[in-house]
Length: 348
Ligand code: ASP
Image 1 (spheres, helix red, strand yellow):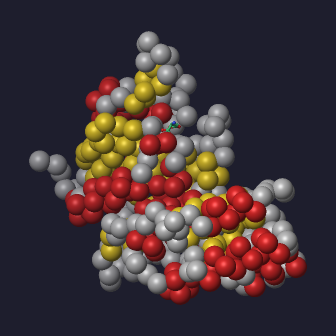
Image 2 (cartoon, protein in one colour):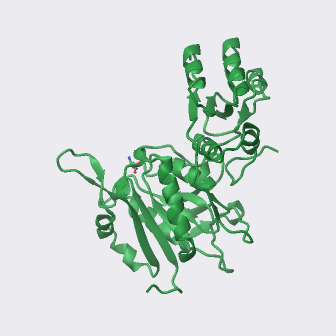
Image 3 (cartoon, protein in one colour):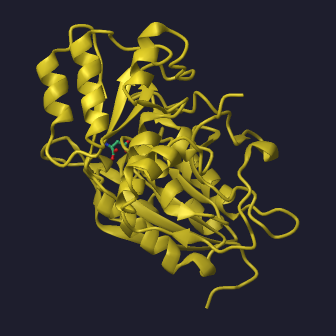
C-alpha cells in the first residue's frame, strides 16, 4: 500500500529513444520494455515518492504515434487522475510536440501536471540526456504550491533544462540535447541548481470545475506548405481530397502567399465548400498578419483564417480535436480564433 503523504507520480512509458537499445544484428535502435529501462535507472528508487508505471505494450518509436494512442493516453490519465499528483509521459522526441499539443486540447481544465519527456541518447548509454530529463520531469510533476495546488497544471515538454508549454513547442534539432524550442512563448521553468518557475506564465485552471477529458478526434485534415513554383495541380489535388475538412496552409513571412488568380480561386472555392483553411507562417518565430501586405490580404478575402503565432503541431491537432466534436464550419472557424489553452497569442 503506498504512503498517501508521499508525492505520487504516474510514469507512462510509450517508447522512444530513452528506452531503446541497439539491436545487435541490425545495429538499429529498438524500443525495449520498461523493466529494462528501469534497470538503468536505479536513481528512481532514491526518490521518496510513490512512482508507479504503466507502459505501452509494445513500446513504440514515436514516428508510429497515432491519434488513437492520444486517446489511450487520455484514458490512462483520466482513470488514474485522482490517485496521482502528476503524470510523466516518456515519449519519442520525433512526434512529442504533436502529442503534447493534442493532449493540451483533450485534457480540458487540467489541474495537474502532465510532463512529456524523452531523450536523444538511450538511458543505458553513458552520456545519456535521459536521466536528467526524467528525474527533473518527475520533480516538476510532483511540485506543489503552499496551498496544495500543482505549480504547473499544464501539458508541458521538459527537455534539456527547460520546461516549455506543450502546444507552443517544436522539435528543432535531431542531434543536440537541446532538441525543442518554444519560439513564441517563453519557458515556464528553467532547471539549474534550483527549478525556477515563472509563475505568471503558467496557466491557471478553474478549480471549481473538474477535468473534462475528450476522447474524439477527426483526421480529415492536411498540411499544405507553399514554395515558389508550386503547381496548380498540386494545390488542387490536396484541396479536392475526398472528405477533406480542414487545411493548415504554411505561408511565407507574416502570412503571405502568391497572388496568382488560380491560387486565390482554389482557396476561395475550398472555403466555399466548407473547408477550414488556417494560415500559419513557415517562419517559426513571429506572427501571421494578413492585413500587412497585399499578398496576405488576398488570403483574407479568400476566407482563410489566421493561426497567429501557433505552431503547426498545435493548429493541426486543434483542428483534429474540433472536427472530432462534429462542430460546424462556423463554430470551428470561430474556435480557431480564440486560444483555449494558451496555444497562441492574440495580438493587441
Ligand atoms: N525516433 C525516436 C522516436 O521519436 C527518436 C527519439 O525518441 O528521440 O521515438
